[in-house]
Amino acid sequence: MKKYILLIALIAFTQLSAQNCAPFYAAKLKHVQIDSLQLAYIDQGKGETIVFIHGLGGNAGHWTNNIDALSKKYRCIAIDLPAYGASSKHWPEKNTSRLDDYADLIIRFTQQLKLKKIVLASHSMGGQIAMITALKAPALVSKLILAAPAGFETFTETEKNILLTYATPQFYFNQNDDAIKASFAKNFVQVPATAQALINDRIQLKQCAGFMDYCQQITAGVKGMLTHPVQTELSSITQPTLIVFGKEDALIPNKLLHPKATIESIANIGTAIPKQQTVFLQAGHLVQFEQADAFNQSVLTFLDTKQSLSTKTK
Image 1 (cartoon, rainbow, N blue to C red):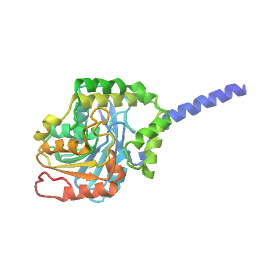
Image 2: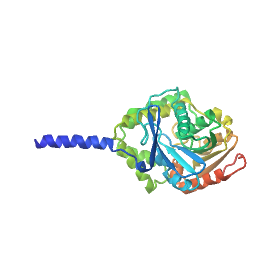
Image 3: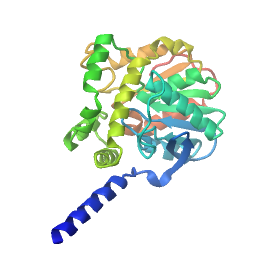
Image 4: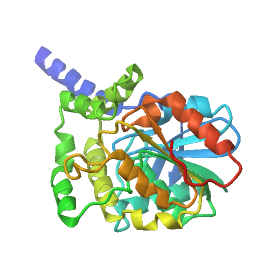
């Protein structure tokens, strides 16, 4: 009988653990329903609206070091994309490109919140989504902020197949704690203490209901980035654009497939955007988190600039 009671207790604890998977920033979250999806988002501050889009495998928590500062002057809305953070876990693909799905969803989201004009701030895969969104809805997006954006670097068909061979849902599903910590470490020059909350969330996610949906969404995101590169469309982006790269980004460019490329050569591709300025900070890939103060100041300066931008790198 005691063994039976212990077994019941263990099952109950396991079920509770699977449900108790709210991200560390959950107390700040709001929700909106779009068709079958429930999107979670942070909404803080008043004024001109900045909508933040996280990158592959991330969530709205990647912007917490920025929202507290920027929300003193702007309304800051950071979205959890489907299957990430506290948003709905299952989201079947609609378009040929997952990134086009994301862009359409961002547009629907702004309509639900009755936002007429927004600044789009974005990181990595989110940067590629933001550029696609700006091209789809130029009247909606007034300015772009691209932190370590994907989409400038392109890949051959052979390189795409290599990437997709490894970026499988099962690969992400099988990552142990050490692999997760090592993966996070690649995003920084030096892992900040505040990043521990992000790491803990990712490790805990393995025990959560919908974890495989999360892994499948990462794979879909990789396919989406490869399916809809934006390099040839950059000259059509009419919005003033701030591009921020970390000088020691270990993920862009891809060091294995493009060993001769540099972060400067990838950033130079972004000069095809007519109204842009590029800033380099002493940071890794998660530049807005690692160098939050410098990133926030760059954003404030950029948003306060009234005149048209010309190509400028510093």
